[in-house]
Length: 185
Ligand SMILES: CC(C)(COP(=O)(O)OP(=O)(O)OC[C@H]1O[C@@H](n2cnc3c(N)ncnc32)[C@H](O)[C@@H]1OP(=O)(O)O)[C@@H](O)C(=O)NCCC(=O)NCCS
Image (cartoon, rainbow, N blue to C red; front, side, top):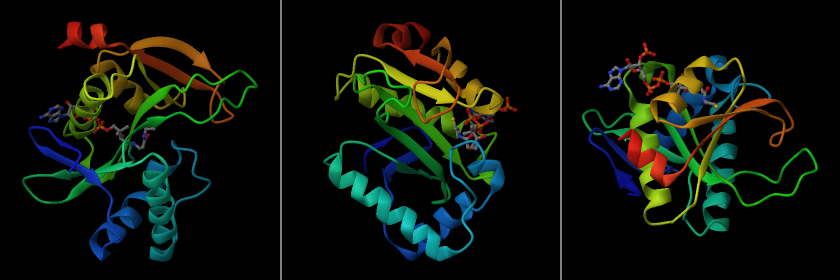
């Protein structure tokens, strides 16, 4: 387990039939993948294995410090989705990277509307600012992704406006600092 919150256990995704099924179930929905830079939704369970293999390589590379992680609902054992904490990619606009850390969330549509994304992200920010002593955490979303931007606002993050710094496209950028987060609690 990475951390827990009132209703969630946040843990690494596992190469098990249940987790592979759930990865497929989450990322086969266009209403999930259209916002996260995936070219198209997953079409077969085999593609879930490719995603899992990529994530597991990422865990190794980051020495198991960073996600993507599964957020499991304690009451049901169902995985609501993915919460991410980790380094943003190298800037795609030619500017120099500063090793910025981002937080993110991808939930199965059956788990939207319960506050799980915000709850898991709060836990991820605790980890970032507490154990990892990260100075600031970013979140980026396509400008029309109102549900994701609403999560950033619920977290008390501050808008930094539009950016083209990462992922090769325009995004709304939010940031939170430890002091800001404490003030919003
Ligand atoms: C973005 C995304 C994670 C937001 O999910 P979400 O469920 O709306 O966000 P939260 O977990 O913060 O839940 C908030 C909602 O739960 C409701 N809620 C119900 N019970 C709640 C509780 N106990 N505590 C808090 N909120 C609760 C809130 O009222 C709010 O509802 P509203 O949207 O009607 O105002 C989800 O839409 C998603 O996965 N989208 C596809 C992928 C994506 O876009 N990822 C982000 C890329 S940048």
